[in-house]
Amino acid sequence: MYVVCTFLHHYYSLWYMISVKVVLKSDRTNTSGDSPVCICLNKEGKRVYQSLGIHCKKDQFLHGTIVKHPKARFYNDLIKMRVAKFERNLHDLIVSDKVGDM
Image 1: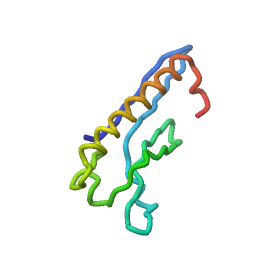
Image 2 (image 1 turned 120 degrees about the horizontal axis):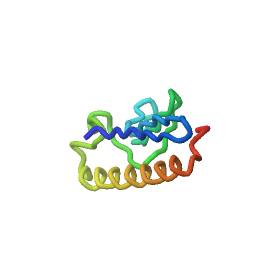
Image 3 (image 1 turned 30 degrees about the horizontal axis):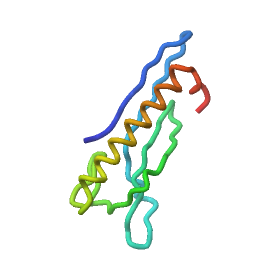
Image 4 (image 1 turned 135 degrees about the vertical axis):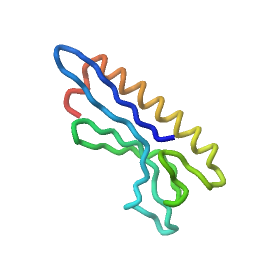
């Protein structure tokens, strides 16, 4: 599951193209070799990362999901919940027109 959602909102001739995806920040590893799983928000080339508090190895992460991990099912459910909550909050911000300057 590769989580990518693009929100289009037309409000006073202004289009918001925002993509939300789950990524592994493999450039930031801890001492045990685990990397943080983050939500990446991309708007017009600007990226913002929000950590999910989940860490895994590079070979345990595939297209937005965690595989070959003892807690993979729990972590994937947690990722889905957090992404859904993030998308709801983002949608509310877009509708209320507060996303102008990310």
